[in-house]
Amino acid sequence: MDIQWQELQPIQGDVIVIEDDPILRELMVDIIEQLNARCVAFDNADDALIYMLKPDNPFALLIADHGVPGTIQGMELSTMVHQRWPDVGIILTSGYLLDVSALAPNIVYLLKPWSLDGLVTTIAGLVQPGVALHKTAG
Image 1: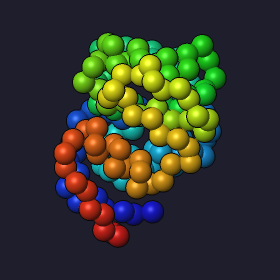
Image 2: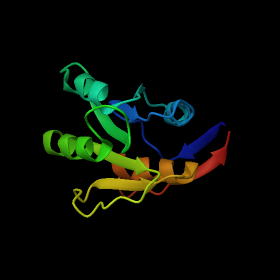
Image 3: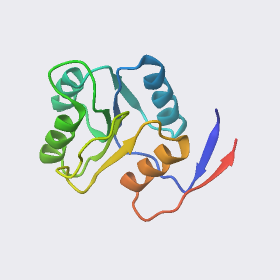
């Protein structure tokens, strides 16, 4: 997979990925790295939150699966991150339909299975709103 996205500006800060499925987590890391961004991946939200709370770990985007092991679920973490870091883009994913009516308007919900194009355009919409993307095979 080598896709170049024109008009996508570099992401300033880490992209945090929380996904308990190791294959999907690796795929997401690969996609983020293809976008020339630094990705830090976790299999649970508890460890990710500990990482995010450290002052020397700036992050620009959170992509969290809702149903992960641990004491914090993706929807809860998304709300917590939005409250503490309102400028951070947030993508919540799940293989199940969730009632997302209580989520803040800038938290984007992607139902699994999402497409590569859907994930990348959602990321771009959060980190550089209003810029249309065009892809070319690399």
